[in-house]
Image (cartoon, rainbow, N blue to C red; front, top):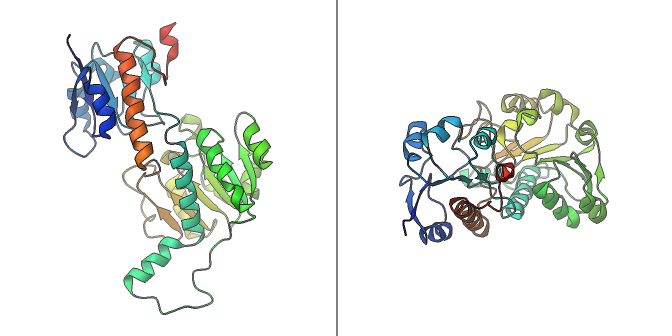
Length: 324
């Protein structure tokens, strides 16, 4: 029996590749870097299926280059790199990897929250340069966490998990979402509030909204001005949700106390001035970088793609309407 021809745009954990190789010939990008646009267009040709990454833009042009393809599986929970509408027109299934990275991302939001509030990175830098003069009562004073107000912008899977982890810190929890979150309300006494109220009252604002046209630059100069001067902003969702240039100005002028970012508007680059600020913590999109999460993403992407190759609806289908 002829094997399916599958392309993987960058090396992923071996568990998913092993699963694919049982019934597929699998080619993986041999270089540990994103494909160029030309490389992507070239390598999708003649494939039965593709596992793509969040920085691979899968649009109509790619679909046309991949004539006869049976599906695209994204190795990511976010899918703003997918033109789902165009895929649906062509009856090409698409999938993502929800669920397996929920706790890891929520934990990373907390790691960032503590790092920026307690000035961990700034303090570490002083120690490493050998310039710490010794203990002083006014050094590196940061923000308290216990008993403060946590604002969760977007109470989906990850936002919910992040908020539930606040239990040990006796925090008041506010959240914004399109629908009421009964889990947060029951477990934490959380309150669903308008976005502006969340901004005004929160000591920490953790961002968990999906990226779409309506959330581009959701956080901007006007929004920062509504926040407390003592507040911190944490983003583990998608970079373009924040206007990074306006965030730099807000941090410079102490409009807010600090920010911690795992994602960036123009990845892999940061806007000018961000790297020089001491009141910001930056990490290179590593929220899902745990063994179990990345392995789970690999297996889930492979499982989804195998279903597509067999003509079946994948478990995490983004356009189920193509199946009638």
